[in-house]
Image (tube, rainbow, N blue to C red):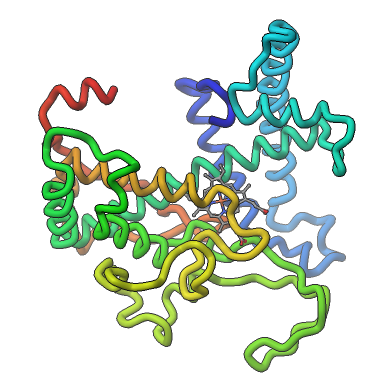
Amino acid sequence: MVLGKKYLDGSGAEEFKWMLDELFLLNGVLNIGDSIPWLDWMDLQGYIKRMKKLGKMFDRFLEHVVEEHNQRRLHEGNSFVAKDMVDVLLQIADDPNLEVELNRESVKAFTQDLIAGGTESSAVTVEWAISELLKKPEVIAKATEELDRVIGRNRWVTEKDMPHLPYVDAIVKETMRLHPVAPMLVPRLSRDDSTVAGYDIPAGTRVLVSVWSIGRDPELWDAPEEFQPERFLGSRIDVKGQDYELLPFGSGRRMCPGYSLGLKVIQVSLANLLHGFEWKLPRGVTKEELNMEEIFGLSTPRKFPLQAVVVPKLPAHLYTEAA
Ligand code: HEM
C-alpha cells in the first residue's frame, strides 16, 4: 500500500527487519543525555551513534524509493495515476499552495512513519495473540467453535465476517490490553499548568501515558494478569480512544491515524491463522515453559520470537488458491 511493490527480498528483507527493530528500540529507550544534558556529548549508552547509523541506512532506502517513484511520474507524464501512498505524497508535495510546505524530506519522513506504523504493530500484536493462545488451549477451542459455526470449513475468513466473530474480536482486545504495541504512547508536552490525581504538572512537562500499566491495573481489571477474552464479551469497552482503560491506539488528536486499517489487518490475519491451522508448541515445550518476556522500547515485541507448529485443517485447495 505504501510503496506499491515489494522492494526487498532475501537478505535485503532481513536487513530491513533489523532496521525496523532498531528503529522501534531506539525510539523507546531512555537516553541519559536527554535527562542530563551536560553528559549528552559522551553518548554513554551509544544510542546516538546507533541512531545516526540507522538514519543513514533508512535515508539510502527512502531516496531509492522516492527516485523510482519520480521516474515513473516523469515517464508517464499526463497519463500518470497515483498507485500508492508515496505517489500520493509526491503529488501533494507538488502543490505550491499548501499551507504547510511538503518537501522531499517530509515525503521520506511520512513514508518511514507509514512503513514503521503499518508493519511492526500488526505483526507484533498477532504474535502475542498466538503466544497467549498457545498457553490457553481452551481459548483456541472456543475460537475454533465460533469459526466453524460462522464460517464453516470451506472458505477463509474475510473482513465482512468480523462483526459475526465476537469471540475472535474479544481475543484481539484482550491481547491489546496485555500487550499494547506502544506501551507509553507517544510523548506529550503539557500546554498549561494542571493537576492530575493530586500531582501538579507544570506547563512544558513531557508527559508519558503508560497504557501498559493501565491495562494491568488491578483497580480497573479483575485478574489483570490473566488472559481472559471473555471479559470483553458484552462489554462496552472498545479500542477507539474513548475508553481510557484500553488505549492501544492512543487517544485524542494524535491518536493512531491507521487504527481502522491496523485493527482490520490484525483481526482478519488472526482469524485466518486460527481458522486455517491447528496450533501446537514444538515437541518437548510445555505451555508453562513458553517464554513471555518482552523487549520494552517504543513497541513491546517478544524477547524471543515465537516458535510453533502449525497443521493445516481446511481442504487443501484453499491453501493453493490463497497463495
Ligand atoms: C495495528 C496496529 C496499530 C497499533 C496498535 C498502533 C498504535 C499506535 C499508537 C499507540 C500510536 C500513538 C498514539 C498516541 O500517542 O495517542 C500510533 C501513532 C501512529 N500510527 Fe499507529 N498503530 C497501528 C497501526 C498503524 C497503521 C496501519 C498505520 C499506517 C498505515 C499507523 C500509523 C501511525 C502514525 C503515522 C502515527 C503517528 C501519529 C501522530 O503522531 O500524529 N499505525 N499508532
